[in-house]
Length: 49
Image (cartoon, rainbow, N blue to C red; front, side, top):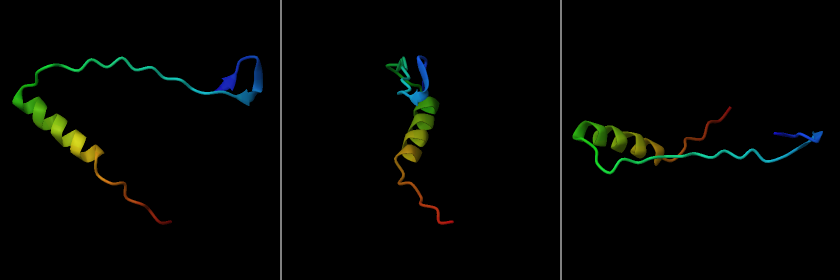
């Protein structure tokens, strides 16, 4: 992100997330969460161009 006082310089982009995690899931939601999380934990595939 450009620095407001000097547009030729770049600063850090800070993003803040407010995440609320439920304490209980029904079975369907739990299966969906398991599916997404397991996909996130898979090693990245390197692509050759």
